Image (tube, rainbow, N blue to C red):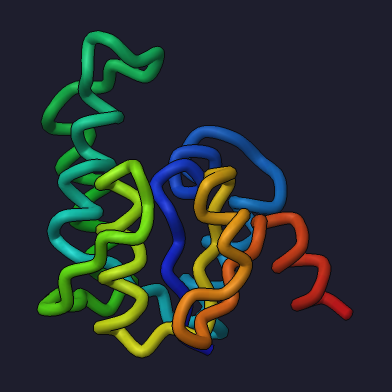
Length: 135
């Protein structure tokens, strides 16, 4: 199963217990192929280290997280250019999913969730996905 996990879900998985952490643990066990791109990882690092965000972790700590995610992820070289969403960051998620042949995008982003499906790729909340996975 090939899945793009959006930044908001990864943040939740990094800092809190719950369904996002269960999803990331499924990736660690090799049950799910986690797809990401350098662009998506850069966005995550920016959120983790930004003084405007509540996390404000050091660059060194963020680098450790990035290295771990690179170890458990399949890095996708994005070639497609998508302009479906008003938020450019959301378009980068769609590009990664498209170029990585993802089956699912897992996100908490309302704009992405409203799409439901993008070029055959199902877009689900982490709760709906983990509930479906555990059925």
